Amino acid sequence: MADADDRAAIDAALARLANDAQHAMAGAVGEATAYALAGGGKRVRGLLVFHAYRACGGAGDPSGLAAAVEAIHAYSLVHDDLPCMDDDDMRRGRPTLHRVYGVPVATVVGLAMIPLAARAAWRAAIELGAGRETAAEVVRCLMHASGAEGMVGGQLMDLEAEGREASLSELEAIHAGKTGSLIAASVLVGGMVAGATAAQRAALEAFGNQVGLAFQIADDILDVTATTEALGKTAGRDLDLAKSTYPSLLGLEGARARAASLVDSACAGLRGAGIRSAPLEALAAFAIHRPS
Image (cartoon, rainbow, N blue to C red; front, side, top):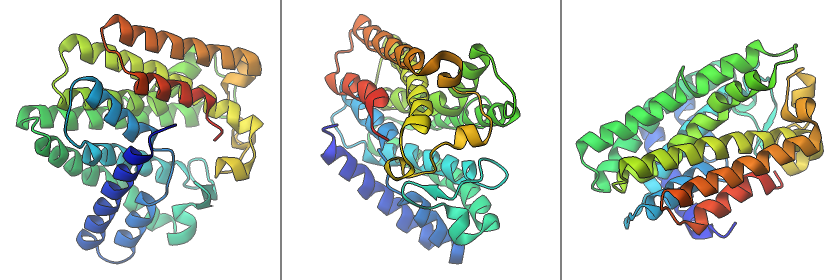
């Protein structure tokens, strides 16, 4: 994935956000927030912001907006790893937040990162010249995607499905919320601040929804085919938690075929709306061919 400069810009923006958090939140909460924001990762959601912004004619630096999206993702990982959720010890190649700072601090940090991200998104949209109405729309989009009708709702459905075999339609509904909603919002807000038309917004959102689902399918495949060292988190957790997955329902080859079909459809939809973006299409392909 040839996005080194954009990734570096996102990391720098996250470092500034972490510094702000440490000044705003005293003691362990500030330190732990900085730890969560500095956790590395592929920055797929942030890169989607960059590429969608540019595909719709944006000419500024969207790294602040990309960092806000990545902060929401980082919050979700903090809570996802808690003992009452997936109870994991490793994330991105290092101990999970609650293993370092304890469960109470990790719980508070996750909650504190939501308004932190909302403020960062507002500020970044204004700095990009989007105007107050569009900036508010960006914040609403991200909060909706990460809330009960999106990421949080999908996570709850995922927990409720543990220990039983979910149908394919149930599984897709779970992951459309848990994973797909924030990925779709990442693409959409990038277009919003660049002044995307209604038709472009619809195409970007559809692209994000399909790529988000494909990304989750790839995660399910990697959970059974990759090592803990390669993943940077504990491999085989889906099996340990008795979760239904795409490989368990479709088989490995069936799951790979489903992911490839989603990416093909996503890219075709962009082209059909007149959005020609080789970087977005490359990122969609990376979502299902990545090694971790």
